[in-house]
Image 1 (cartoon, rainbow, N blue to C red):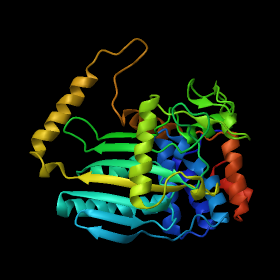
Image 2: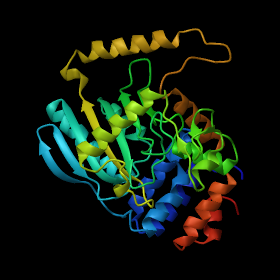
Image 3: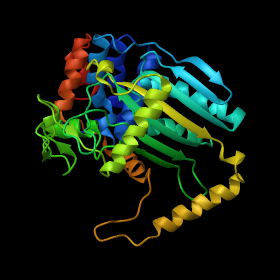
Image 4: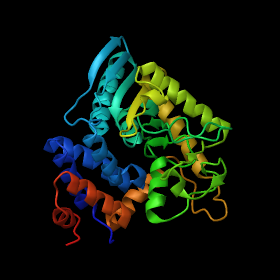
Length: 358
């Protein structure tokens, strides 16, 4: 398929989301965040998630029109419930509360439970950074089937459990946003590889026999394989931290079998949002960050590398290229979007027209 312009893809996504029971504002918000992930090069969290969302809608495990509610507050500590609403809405509302609390107290320890898929966690770090705050995020996943093997294990016991830290822009450099799964590759990237008929990197997957493989298909047939943590025992340890801080602390649950229904993606998130000016001279601190980033990026590029980058640079480059050239959607993913849309009553002809394919 030819590449699709971001605005067309956003309109297509909003149409399908609206057909699932969302009002126009919610549908636009969800579609915007999904396409934003595509623009930044993270197709794993982009428009291709809509079929999974439709499946959750049909199983009653994703509920349109829901908003966060505050369950508990103790000074700068806040506990919220997302009522299995769209994470693109719930995440933004939760971060608005966290930012407002950090303005009052200098920091906020936010714990959010029971949100449907929060999408690209970097989006919530970026909200904090753009408001002048530093944020750290730990996320776990319940309800979906486990996908990641523990270090030394041969089957899946938990999910890809994202971690994120975001720092505001400095005088010379844009914001620093480290947003990553705790696995060598995200599950969504395995889905993209499966749909496009490509292989995953070595040492990223094991088959059901526990032997390493580069075939993404082991995650889409029974018996299933499992993803492997990044950095061996270190990524595994960080994933466990996410289970404890995001799942257990929030009360939303960890990746235990009794929390899984296989039909939805429920996220819990604990985030720390900090006003750096309450600890140090803000100008001096940001000048130090600015100087350090500049120093690091001045390292001579290694053979085969154009330039040294920091977290956020690849996303900015991808956004520029994809705004200019459109977003490629593979045939399998587009077919899944067609099936999801038609299941909600949106005709294939309308979907094709929205995508500019007719």
